[in-house]
Length: 304
Image: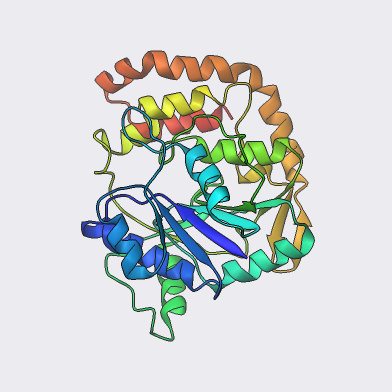
């Protein structure tokens, strides 16, 4: 039915712990759920063997070694015959509400995209999935933290296997923008785009950004992020606010607000190219004067 695909960071320290937590939660979504780990990062092959999931070392990368999204999406399509794929970041824990939402989406249409917001939560230890209350405890911790990210932060995408086939530009994963392009593309080809945030609690396990030489600022404002944004000029950017439908406790509902968001984005679309170009030109200056990535993202969000 469903294949989870991801490209982990090296399995060491805290990152190794939370990645194992995430993968084990995906395996519990459905008895037939498949998981494929892409890339040759340290410990990936061993973790795949330990957790009983598939390992695919071959993935195309840019000059800095960051995987291309297209290589993962198209590679997964060749490796599995399951009708649904789920690209998911390897720090996201899923609960049983994910399966219930997915079953509702499948019942509506065979060609769709389902995504949702995440809940940031501090988790530092290996989780005991044999405990009967592991889901209830995680939900309690996430609600206590009360940190649901804004609609532009998207960490999982469930889609029909041919949706992105040979259509993805050279975007790299783990850098700003690739997720927003995925949302835009699904909207642009007219498939059902479902925001499952009201019914799915996707738990993001907080971590640092030591995997990038420039830390958090490099992930969201570095050269690779700017390269991602260069492929999104002309308005090729969307968030969960652009979903055509929302999955609510009462069922699937049209998201009439998305027309307002779409009109607003089109109205500012003429500024997008200039904005992304300005970000690139001013990056060295912004770094020198200490403007951090989150400040840039606030400005950027205001222009979307």
